[in-house]
Length: 164
Ligand code: FES
Image (cartoon, rainbow, N blue to C red; front, side):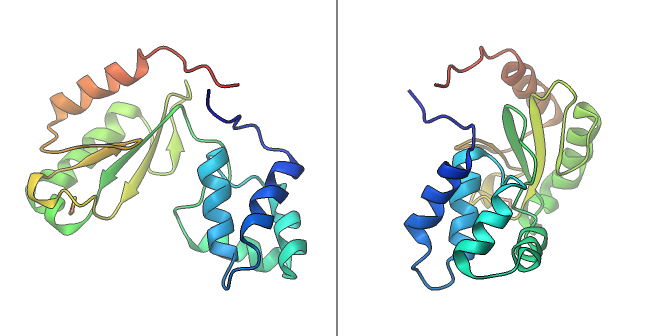
């Protein structure tokens, strides 16, 4: 059974307390919160700020500076398209255009059925087999538009995972 992804002030505080004594704790804390809940909730900002002795503006500034951080819940699947050079040289640009058209969204957006959030990534360590994409912990290489569509169809028909 996976840990619940519903955040509470107490669960945010738990993540902060585990890391706040480390130097440069803000970034690891934001990563930990996003890893656990899928995003950094707005309500986490004052808790983080108070715990680290920083202002809310400072915490907001870091969240908005790094595109990696989400401030709203992602879709059921986060699909990342590699935009780095090696992938772009073997069709990555066409693939990302196809991905946006197929899903009807841009980067950092989620399909209206909340199935897929589309994100850009800069190298997945799969450069020899581009263009590459990642969903969860799995990386796919030499992704054609047809293969992309098949993967999206498969993702959208997967049964819901029980979380509790
Ligand atoms: S450039 Fe795309 S995986 Fe490295």
